[in-house]
Image 1 (tube, rainbow, N blue to C red):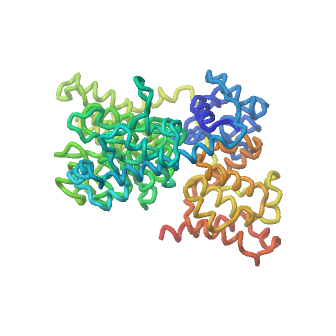
Image 2: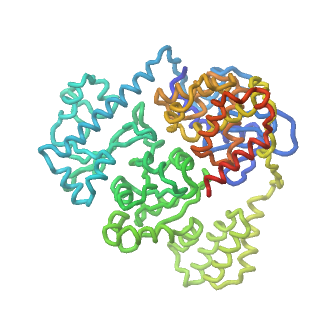
Length: 583
């Protein structure tokens, strides 16, 4: 097996839209891209490209998978040949395949080390040196929130953590690989990376400590914040601070704050659905992670120039994965933490409800650097605004903003509408209007890849629902495993998918289609991708999963009875479950 980190980098260097775009003509439709499938003849496009998770799926012939699968199918290559082709395209070197479980064992050891380090820092907080605890109290953090986030303290000692971890049996190499210690260029000795800092443990979705952030308690201390560098268990561009708590929120909205203290202050005020990026600008991977749990993101960045530029970039990244961005304005305070201390949570909730949508924010930004009281300034701002209005796909939404803008600038709505219409035509010039039929509602066709499903249709669909649920929420694996064993899956293909997914997740790997690429055929990869694509419109609740598990455990149901369950009946059952959840 190839290292998971290499496969991630390979896919990042070969975005599926860029690769597929060199073989087929892609047409944008919202956050998705569509094309006529290159693997079967058709006039209406039925192949969808999902840029948010770097996959594709054809609702006509059921081909699908990741970028490696696509190259395998379209070029007729074996797995490793396809990997080499993509690596060559990106100028990357293919590593030797793992011959043992060394990578998985190392990951588990690093997670254990991080947990031990977090405990050490937490216990230090109430030790002889109380400066860290005093800082947190000055920031008005309650004892329960300190415990909940596992906040800690790294004192002045250059080797406090080093010696403590050595006593537990961890090696120099372990401490260097985890980025908890560094090596001195002068003496060659190891020393603690975090000193004189309040420590913020960073957790993954399953609650494992994967990294740390440290805030200096010294006046003028630099850097103000120090964060773990990337390690085998931590990639800062793929994780979000406090996402392990935010994912439990019932809200379909996330608050995106700028740093650790803002997040904790907002959380303490009663808003669990808050996250922050980890010492770096927001990334597409982080947006994809948010998309798994939310439909809307309220951006709460500083109002200075750097914060505003970061807001614009965040808006574009969030839109690209299908999230609705909104922008929070914080009056009379420099950040959410200060605002909450001054005015309290009730007023902060009101700010959230009044947050501007991204279009309103962008239209206001068109005025930046221009004096709209002058004729030239107004024309400059309007030209910028026309470009934004032309990018709004929904005509009704576009007209609402257009009318409001025309009133603000005191110009004729018809003139502004004509300008926007010209811009739209310009952007669409040379493109044929594409029609898209919603094939996802069509009954599932018999799948020769999973012949066991022929007499066990209801059970096979229940298995697919369970798998789809785990694809979306891999952190729920342990809960599912408490309810059902792999051997209780009745179809061979779905059982193999479940077993493979279980093993990889338990080894500490994050969910990604590449987990399956080297162990399943291109046809099977299409099936795996299709499981998620065919259920895209369905909100799968934990109750629905429990009902699916009950179907597999129902010993009274014989194969003949199961086969009588039609696609429509099964979908009707699931719709009823969704209605029950909403009510």
